[in-house]
Image 1: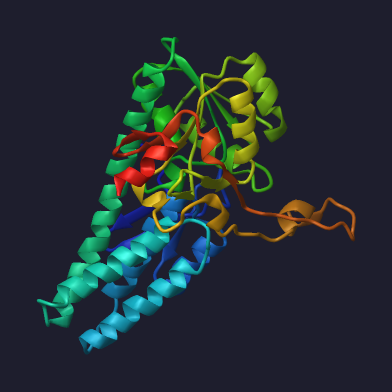
Image 2 (image 1 turned 180 degrees about the horizontal axis):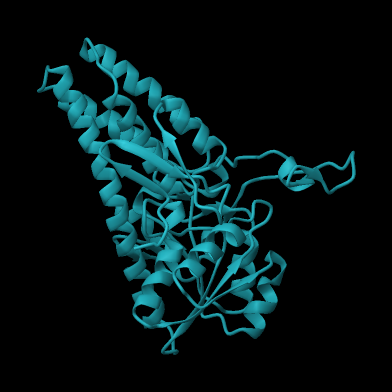
Length: 349
């Protein structure tokens, strides 16, 4: 498991690691729906799986502190709370899926249970299982990815390049793309890991590098603009990145910069993988053109630590994500159920 946890859930209390302050390790208490919304919106917690689990656990914590006089009142509170939480960030699909699952579960159990206290308890237990499942799924993703990469490699030990942060900090505990790196390292099959800085928010430099150093993994941080020369000179075996939403045809939204890394990987003949839980696959979206891309404040580009570093009057565009076409995902999509070619996803539903 990871040395530093993205969240601590204990006796129905929730603390989220403030990832804005890393390398300092500071946890913030989450007691209300607004607390959870703010943490997700301001990116104190980020990464599609972590957002989903943190949002769901926020609801569990809030429910645990409230009493409801009727089933209708409980149902309204759950519905409105989830609407608030999913509105914090629009691109990552996992929290939408979690909200749908919670609502669907409530509709099912209220058919046979008329006790409001019992219903509340069942909802909380259902959410707590989401936390357990996320960690199990991530460990399976790491194992599946490591095995697939080694099977299709001529090398005994491999070097992996990753972008942004798809590690323990982006999930409930183990990581997706970094989970693959972790699994390779645990089995003494990792030669080296390369992580990009990931401008403009520097998740790679701040978070992935932090995780790799904390766990003693042999790793090098590179600038985003060094990816091509790294592939050319450093014997990169595979690229493994996470995902915020995968369309049914395999087109994948991930942190801005992923698309261009996939292009250069294909040019250099290096397999490019997506690592994500099955909940990241959105069967209701046919292709990447239908994925809503979040645009963030231009101050992430124009300012550094609150100080302007660009000239006044310059226009900026700051999409948080881009979409990598399925044709560039040459290695496959690593999930807890196995590794699939993009064109195989539609057959999994």
